[in-house]
Image 1 (cartoon, rainbow, N blue to C red):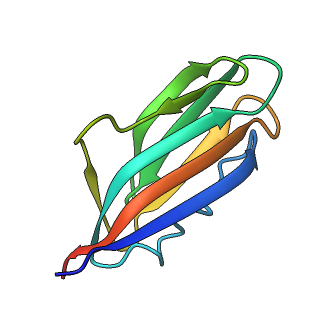
Image 2: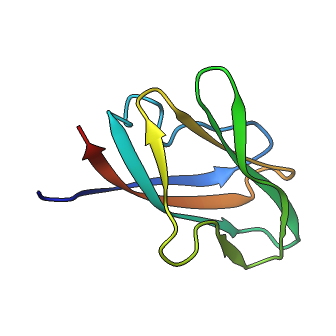
Length: 112
């Protein structure tokens, strides 16, 4: 079975929760998130969070993580993965305006 890799990106994430990647319609059946990298593009240290809303609950992947200027964090290490379902929505937020660039890699439709 062929693997369908996907990537989603955001630029200049700020103080409002952003759910542009994926927006729920991008997750179909069950998908595997294989990488989330958050980079601080500002001159100062920022605080970031990433969470998934499953339709009724916010489940944090990371909350209030401090990222120094010019640094990035990888939220999924090594062979770790997690599964999302159709309708799940991923959000990112910072304590500083236009502070984060985000890259998410996923495998589409791991189970149909």
